[in-house]
Length: 413
Image 1 (tube, helix red, strand yellow):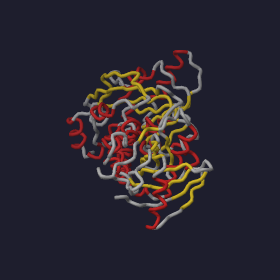
Image 2 (cartoon, helix red, strand yellow):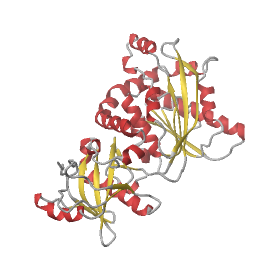
Image 3 (cartoon, one colour):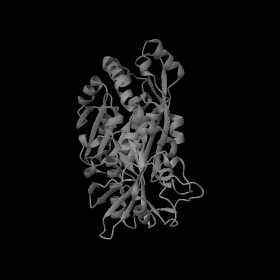
Image 4 (cartoon, one colour):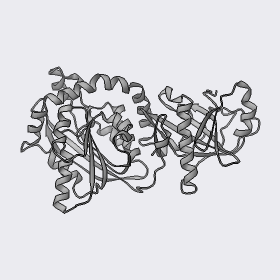
């Protein structure tokens, strides 16, 4: 059965509430019987993403406007709209759908919605049906969920993780995150000493993962710590005589680590903000494209759901590349951390999740290697091996996904 939220009309950027009662089915039927478009919008924390629009072919005249059809009432046929055919319409449909998510209050369900849109005779767009997710979990045609499977980074597993993160994000940021940040502020001197020890490979391996690659434009360094990436990038560019402009903006949850990062002089700004929030709020920190996203030895504090959520955001927002490391955290290491009363700093090995996540459409895995990286500054004895990844966008100027802030339709990416 159809879950009615609102019926709203949108004309050239103006959103008007046109809620109707139960007597509108007949009027709607005429719209649904015409060729129209459908856009799936996924909520991601404080933001949302609009996926590749579908073109929906007409149904039989006697069918009801059901979002979830039985086999007796088949859905219309679907095919994905090609951005190259009409990029302006493609983006307008996505923008319209994101406005519908916010204006219909579908964002309250922590998932998103399917938005059915019709083109008007004057060239405007009208939204005539908003169906809260998770209707894509019950596709009635093979291609009905193609946009999710093809364009949402990580596909359905990452989508489910995103829904979970939407529900739990506030509590996790209020509870464990401040404790981890305070812990690293307390041990920042020990951390820096450990990082500079002869047997510690954090800096050499970070340098190896970025040396010779393009970092022109603006880079977001998540969990920037003491600024190892900024130092490695400066050293790499100096060795190659590269004088091109590179802006690096850092984010961390530890005030002590952020201060140490600022003192390197390699960062334009360093902000106290968790990675789950700095990406959805990126316009606050930089009013332009995010060309590169990086994260070294920071993902292990995330839950598997938060990791998928952040990774999907990285692939959505980065215009050129994503570079990060995943630490092979062991059970023995976590047991030692818990024995010190630091169970809130439990770490997770995300290698299996990364392998299942795969390489999103429009990207390629440009570089990957594994090596010993660091000895724990907390336990002072556990050695951790690390996997390094660099992904590059195959077509930097093209993306089928549009990101937007909830309620902020004027600055969508």
